Length: 395
Ligand SMILES: Cc1ncc(COP(=O)(O)O)c(C=O)c1O
Image 1 (tube, rainbow, N blue to C red):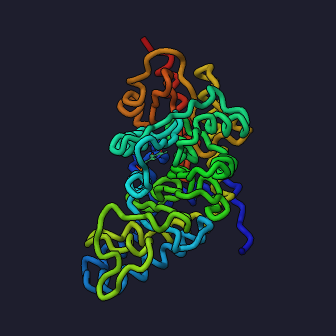
Image 2: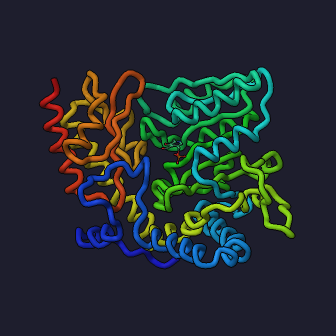
């Protein structure tokens, strides 16, 4: 690997930021929900859209399948696994539905989730378990995240001899916490239970080595921290589970006269649709690798830390885990003072043009701030001033 250049100067970060065309009226602090791609990624997608609009036969019949294979190879190298363990899907939600529909469950079986899971994921497993008379068990996690053992053991307490599948986030949506997924996976697998990790916040935000992780399923969206176009994601399936996998949409898999010979080929051709987003994933990986993943994390974690310090000063509250203990990365997650903050997200947008989610979690309100390479100190200062105003003017 070539030696990565270090970016230390404000001008460097300004130059990198100039790759984004974010609407000038907006302080965009919600990359964690919907990422915004930098220009080289949008241009790569645009090139594929144009190609397709000008000569669809050439793209669909001759180019899409080999290009999708190359895309999975590139993504596989980034994630630490082989192309044949990956399928491209629109998003983590789609991927979770694939696991829910493919994984065998019967009456009385249990699926374990935690009380920090994404709401739509809970709904997916509610529907799946209800349909077959299986049970959804929710592990109660500690109020404060203090050590790997404490978090792992709190989750493990939900396992019984009927648990067939353990589902948990790598980085949680309502609480932005980075979970000790390696330790959890090892402990759960040693009890003979399959592991499904919901990881849309992880690619790029934290290093990933899927083969070493040895989970059964790992799902993510590429349109968050990786900055690939909206509507791109993947599902990783360990070889020991590949036989059971079925796409939600049954189509050719491979265009005739070829025939799909493996699980991942079943996911390649899913009917005539827009494949341009998937084909721009390599451009997103190139973009971040050229800057350097270490540089990306150093800068964004630092911004998130600054946001945390300043927000904690204003709210007088402390996050659920200690940032120096590795519980947070590019996102800041700070509790708000007691009270009803249901209008805060709307006020931040309508009065200050700030996009930042305000989350209600276990009877408390939190603000979540996402920092990417387009985030500036000016964006954050604007947020601090807005919070000064909104906290002091609350009725
Ligand atoms: C933990 C988690 N899981 C799943 C999802 C769903 O991701 P998508 O909307 O990209 O399918 C999200 C979205 O924010 C999430 O945070």
